[in-house]
Length: 105
Image (cartoon, rainbow, N blue to C red; front, side):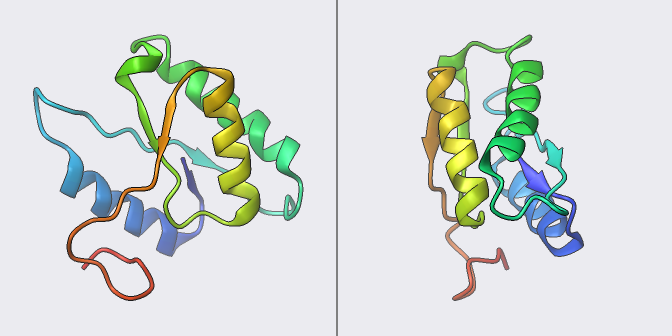
């Protein structure tokens, strides 16, 4: 789950390249709109619900780990609630080579 912000999209793509492993694990990036939704956890959760439901068409909840690293408080809360509703493991992942702000090098 990634906002449309260009820096966030760039970081998401870097994490995808780092964690993707053909035949072992697949990383999906699902973009959501944050614009105008600051503080609106329910509206963010609705978008995340849709993205997760789409992924669940091909995977079981036990096959999925959702990373909420670097999200805003609202986004992290919405993501966590969506995961719990679907029995998906939310996780905080950190690539071994990150800057002090959490960006992948």
